[in-house]
Image (cartoon, rainbow over all chains, first blue to last red):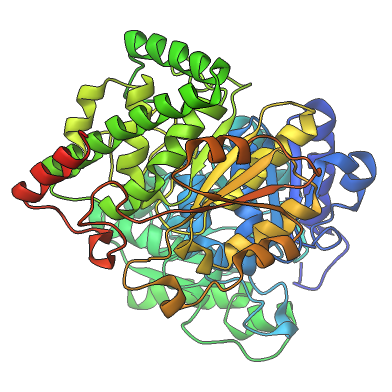
Length: 317
Length: 295
């Protein structure tokens, strides 16, 4: 499948909205809080069904997150929805102090992350969110790879009793999650097995890692593909096993290389079982103008880019 | 969960005192609140002396507000700190944790002896309030400009449930320079949160200088009013005025109580002096302060 094949791909925001609506019908503690993002957070249906339980605080992200914490304090389960760059960047200190440090059961829903707003420029690119959220103690960081994981994330976060950040993909992705795959902290999803090298991918890069595995298989290279729905807490055992059982690890994420999945995997590898690695993501630059697919390809975040990184790793260590 | 548990003896005394104050005539209520505030102030001085750390000036300016709130206004139960029907109280100016801890211990939320551990290694009593460690605290504060948004969320939850509990938040005047307050002020008024009361400890000093010399708050009453709040201005050391100001909204709007206070109130050499924001008194000064607070 190519990156532009939309036939079997899904905009996960729709799955997010549908699951949230179903959950809200089951549990009256569920409320949605947004920042003038009823449309972009796909909350129109929620507003129609539960108008009182949709709280729009306007364009005010620090208040947005603080209000979420207060609602949680009073027994609600708030899903705080906003475009990922502004939710995580503008309200970073509120996420730390009011939500994570206060152990408030708030589900922070970062909409349209990564390069989803490609043409709108770096102010709207959410590539730092994974690094920022991973740095906050006590906050689960959940990165769904497809519609199945998006729905599971909504359910899991609502039931967890814990603060969490859920990164809701906008870029259309096919379903990659096999039947019966785990969805819980410290549990990777094995998508393909192999012993030459391992690719660890999250979110929108997961299906591309599978495409890379298919391309490499034609050349006799057997790739292990791991998906990490939970960036934090991370499945360190699966990483160590991959390091032991294959010749090296390539990570792939729609985020900056400074502090996200690649950094997390590297920290585990280097302290527990050093092997060669390649870290694929957005380098420390602000992106040029272009749509999402263009920018992902531009930064080597394509199936071909992953294939090249694996070959380079196998060739040069 | 909380590392500290209620002191049942003390909390029984608190319940009786709170009931007595709410039933008493004005003169008797004022006299009792004055006495309680003096006890809390003495406790604050001793805590800061032991810890050799703290924000004594702001602690003393906010004491009368805290004591009036807990003894005269709030519906809370130290033995059931997370009771769902409680009034919510948020100290947004979290650097004045010593005043809040002293008040909470005085009410029996945890044993008074614990105050001796203020800011000591591994103490539950951090330099800023922590809801996981200390019963009676609703949200972790310390970074400024956080309390009003959280309190707004609490009040929204009560509104959603049609519940009759209320939400109170105490803000420093200096922290109103943080824009997050004004985001919340707009939202609270927009949603008609009449169960929300913000009390501004208007002592006119911040860490480095006077508020009006730093980033002037100007016509503070007009600011709140124009954001859609009902504004009440009081002497923040007048317990009866505070009691009245913290009663419910008469207009269906959130209430901002601008409480004019004196930083360092009660200790003559600390009053209205910027250096006492977080200066630690010497042993002689501690003795002098306690002597003044004994009168």
